[in-house]
Image 1: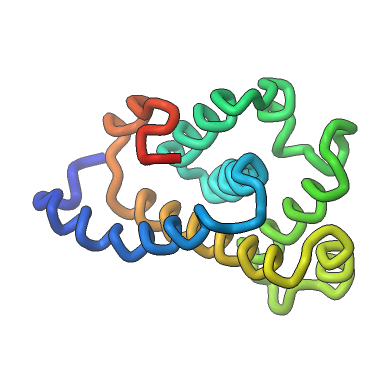
Image 2 (image 1 turned 135 degrees about the vertical axis):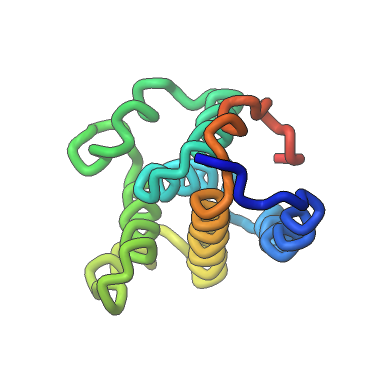
Length: 155
């Protein structure tokens, strides 16, 4: 893949809008580790190598096990995700796939585990990571993947 954006300053200016969402989410009652788990799963679904690199490193720095990361694609069948995590993963997948309205069953399970504010914030997290994924898939070149250090962007 060739370099698509020549002026990196334009990239940084555009990403400030998504950065504001990150600032909002940093104050969320939803635990950071769960948000990063969602960011990892959504990035996996979207095939965003840059975000997978970043969030796998951040999760590992927070103590996340490699086993859970390796089996994330099969979270429904793996026994080591909590009910709260499963509800968040189902919510994130439904919002990322957007096959119409989020199914009632997915919503009903989410409200068992999340307050209204947490569900709003979880939704904002899914919106944010989908935005970053799409931006990276449009403009990031493969040689920019792999150099992220945990916490590099203030997480």
